[in-house]
Length: 441
Image 1 (cartoon, rainbow, N blue to C red):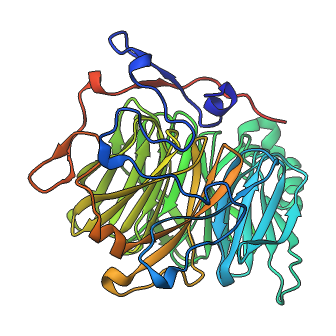
Image 2: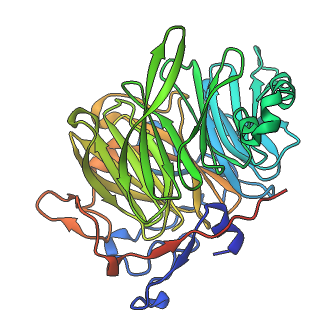
Image 3: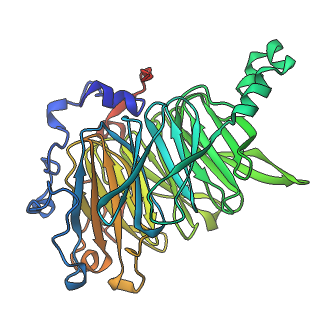
């Protein structure tokens, strides 16, 4: 793996003395793990290298697999988001945000900042988080003109100037940092009512922004190391995950006409970095991916008690996504694992394999690709990778139910074929250590 790629997700791999790296080769190309049982072996898709093409009629068969791909020489793909009307937004280190529709390039817009680390869509507004610590706000066109216009920046220029001339800031320089991130933005999330925007940064803070006027309401010194993910959850709770190995819970409280967030509890504390967080659409579970390849999950209706661990990857989990009762986990091992939740139990369904580099971001389309109806349900999943490509996948619940495998090659509970609810012993996992980041100008 390239050194630049390792630095991008803020840690590096180091093996304990008793583990031989040759015994644990990383996945490359279109292959799955070398030591996998035969039930993991699938014939390669004939469209694995096709640009944004669809060769399977979804309505004719319960197909699960690759539907199309986009490869552009614009650098690594770090972020993507699915918008209304079948739009897909992709961000890379080229400073360009590309807009796609019906598997074709629809539009695009460019900022003058560093790489695009996070994208989130709220109605006709698109928020992008950047390497320079700023959030750009864009407005989608009212018609099909495809012209997206930049309508603001967080913090606003007025707020930045006002803060710089505040006499108190000359006494304590740290106060001037309240409204501005001083390192790369790593994650964005919207509150349940979409009135607030949460931003996480490598500067160890979380900031809360009021969307109506782009004002920074709060700045929380949340962790002792880079904050890799933030997600607004349920019951007024906000979750943050950091390279310090902690998942923290923050409680939103209304105070008069305003709102304030207070520390609630530390949900998870471990040596491995927390790399991704996600809440399922039913707001019943919180998922926490980490650099040891595990995904811990917690149940809302049991006071956020630890409900289990998903074990599907041999390298770091870099991104998570959910759709109804399906969970998608993307990893540095180049694979995407698909899980189905039934009650509190999670069952491994399949692996989406086709990327040649770490899977950095995932999104589930809201363009009508998700359909309810038991086994007839399917959804469209988008994945962005450090191999400079975006791939489109179709996941059918019917296919998964018909050909559901007992599980990936990891320790399982053979009584119900669900993921084992425990943490593997230290000699079975790779140790990872965080290294200083190189900020890209």
